[in-house]
Length: 366
Image 1 (cartoon, rainbow, N blue to C red):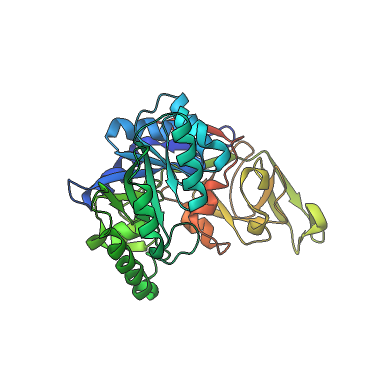
Image 2: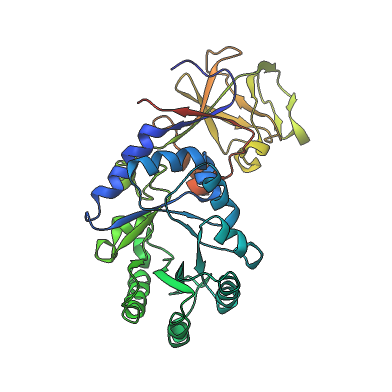
């Protein structure tokens, strides 16, 4: 693989497939896998990721919004797509593109029932979302009686019931997670006709095998992270973000760097300017020594304020030249998780913040 000549986000599909197999190795052969490809497949390329996983035999996809599902359908994706957070104004489009909406409130359920009936549709597939403690979206246990009456009608077909857990990666919240699982188990008993039950995300798959049910949902695991050092070793980060050195400057003692003169040289300092900034997803919080990149396998601290389209790093101890390749994240030198920890955030935020103006490059061979 040649050296990078501009800012590029490499999407390593062999790593994606390896991660998919890791997830499958944790569940029984009868348990289905739902791949979460919302937010441009966690900052990558939703179409490329979905096509790869569809060929690999994934059972379901999930997106946040109807527009994300439509984009996949327009590119030929045939696998069922669950829309986790549909809005009323897009329900007609959901039907037009064969998307399966989550029913999370009576407002959305009544609106969708009306749309389906107006279009004389029978048994349109929908999913019921229950709130078991995350307190974000979902019906409550007390709603079950009214919901069962709704699903006696001919217009809707209940495909699954599901919930979302709040802290499956946190050992200190095991008791809370088990309480959520107990509530979901109780709810499940009321829906014998529902062919699928699913409650676990990636960390839940790894930490709560007793609750795999009929299907599991995985997002961050597919992209290379298990939210725990012991599990991270089994996954391979899919996204590698690389850039180059645009220019090298030497600052003398007392000279300043960048906006607001945030960095003042205390001695002679060699700095490199990189063509990537907060408009590309590298937040200002990484500036002023909080984050680092790698050049020739050596760490280079980000100094001064991160600019919209550029950032500067200290290369005083690195023998490098203009045009040199720079690693921001990869699967060995510095992962998205390790970069995230430098600014007290999480890998999800790093990945999903990556701007679409960054060139995407599909890597299809190991």
